Length: 241
Ligand code: MN
Image (cartoon, rainbow, N blue to C red):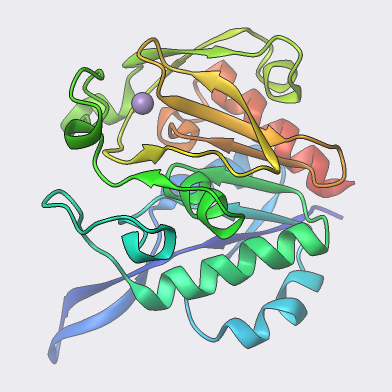
């Protein structure tokens, strides 16, 4: 049996026959990577957190996907000018997803916003806007064709399971984020950093919860990128148990 991988999603107003309608949105790159590495993807529309324990029990793995910003009030942050696309319904749903995933030890891959919401859910904080909080940092918010190309290095902890999964101690990663982890939740340790010190990857400090968080977008680099394929394949293997 191929593992069923739930993927969290966003909401956005899209053009429709009635003018504009709110839609569940998830770029196809996520489902393509899950399928390419042996999983079956299912999209999880933001909604009622009360259904999450039952939902999680039916999944073999969870991807927390990228998207807009986490509400700064959730971690004592400020609504700086750069903060955009906050969705309280999505935030509430994903906070509950993270906590249920921890409780049920569900294999989890948290990507970009996904790593940020996991950090907030478990007691950490974020830089609301890197350019404001860390003006000396590299340009981490790349647009256009650059999203599919490596932008900077992520130096991985050689003893981490993430480095083992990727098969290297230096990952060349894309970078499509203007927020980053500030205080790292106590359950995590940093296992990847950019040359400017921005946190690029975390994993739990103990083995109970098989989870990786990455600030970059392996699904955008795609199955043709060997390191991204290895990461997804290792995650799907974990989900397959
Ligand atoms: Mn980056």
